[in-house]
Amino acid sequence: AQKITQTQPGMFVQEKEAVTLDCTYDTSDPSYGLFWYKQPSSGEMIFLIYQGSYDQQNATEGRYSLNFQKARKSANLVISASQLGDSAMYFCAIPADGGSQGNLIFGKGTKLSVKP
Amino acid sequence: DTGVSQDPRHKITKRGQNVTFRCDPISEHNRLYWYRQTLGQGPEFLTYFQNEAQLEKSRLLSDRFSAERPKGSFSTLEIQRTEQGDSAMYLCASSSGQGWEEQYFGPGTRLTVT
Image (cartoon, rainbow over all chains, first blue to last red; front, side):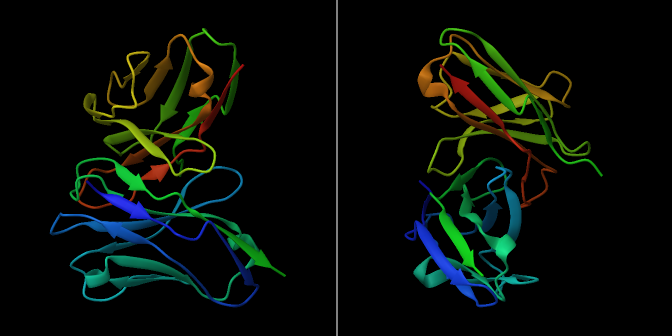
């Protein structure tokens, strides 16, 4: 069964600095995708970035990038130049069956606080 | 451009009452998902639809829970005989159903059972 582990319940970062949020996963599927979502205090889940297991290059989306290490089953999110608005919960997720058919399995999340 | 909408945003009910939530997905999306999120946890899958067909249900979805998507557009999630343990945020998401694409989430319905 798929599993996501996020070992950092909370993280602090100074505004304008970079921060790395950890995510490890467990899957027996040969191909899969990894997703990161942001959840501000308002509650809505906002998609940030995606990486397919066969993608050769690490994904980047603006200030977000993935440090994807397939052999270590690790997909850490890097946020560069942190902003106050980045303060939120961050969740890593993997499809439940490794394929495209259904639901996502989420980790417990990391609460990021950006200090001015 | 309209995203996923959910109604109501908040619901307070007494134990034993029935409640129904509605989700309107992004119009061209044929997949619709329901998740439940309790405090300090990530969302947990409840069920999902491909058009009007309910393709999968989680073990979390007891027989007090029922979901429908009658015309393949909006969906409803009903909880009968609510219990205090049902208090949670109920999230709806939709996707186009093409490969590994992201799911777009609504703002959620926060249920409090007193």
